[in-house]
Image (cartoon, rainbow, N blue to C red; front, side, top):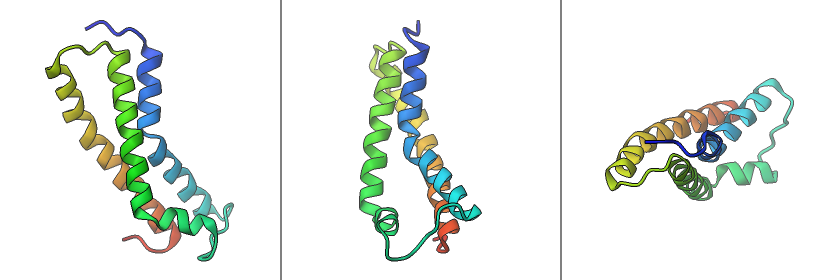
Length: 110
């Protein structure tokens, strides 16, 4: 397997991890008091809508995985299956950790 573009692979990884990274940054900002949190603002509504967060996470994860796979020149179905088998559990773990961290910073861990 010859990787066509390492930059493309890294862009795919960043796209796939965009939502967990945002969650971790927001959790850090809320914990340190830089970003005030009220239960009536738009911030509260966006981060409490689990359907939106799950859909956005799924779409960004799939776009990131496909971008990384195409940049790595994956051609066989087995290579794509291997990429999905490895990437999806790792992304699910990263998403869970970041969402739990954000929930803890907002005062409701689960």
